[in-house]
Length: 348
Image (cartoon, rainbow, N blue to C red; front, side):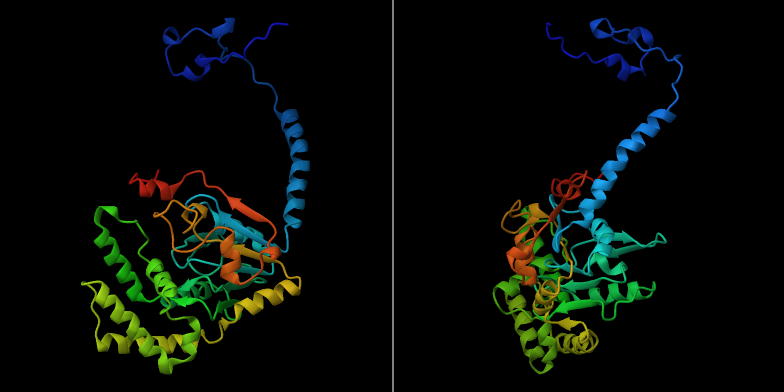
């Protein structure tokens, strides 16, 4: 039998044109009449429902069989909806952990009453009251923003006390890091990176050149001021527009003395906690920030973030072995907002 290529009816998609202006139907296919009677859909709907039931059961089984340590990662440039998925999956896990990034992540979730929560550093499992949340050593922590998130959650009846652990190895992100990032973008002119100006990059820079302050430094306030002075002095030497004074340093130290007192119950050796949780057979879900194409090594360099939001960042950002990691769920967004921003196109 000779092969007959399938024929499509362009006239069906041009119904907005007058009848005389429409092209003839190809292959001798007559245009469809609008006056035809509608067939009952009840039987069709029943068949569809019956066909969907096995698929739904298979999907449910797949969720229940997720590995002990699983991860949710973005596969593009961010804004794929990772937070919503983590919020849904959290009820099946004992621990939800952030392994990298800082408050540049923006994860929007809703509680059962439809109340909206915009999380930037707190893991998206916080709405599930049985979930322990962890901010790992690979993250950078802006304490003013962190406590603002906690205050917002607790004012809406969500308890955070004892439910969030912050790594003693995580680096502290200061307000001056945000100032430095803004100055750096101005310096680059037309070649700017287009960062969030949350200070993430400068904080990781201090980490890499080994003069940054870590959460554990809050336990040693007697040396905290001297270390912070070194950071401020280096920033002033590097950027002509950066200014600071002895008064600025004193006020910052006093502010962080109060933060240290409040954060005390949150500070934990999360590397030990995570590995103990694995030994205890607890289920762990890792929440990635940003996305793979923003990875410092594997992304669209230099238009990337300053950490590793791909699979490798789970190991280094939480201190767990690669053999512990099982399922990785890649989230894809229908609209690539970050790419549109880089190309200076307005989002739809």
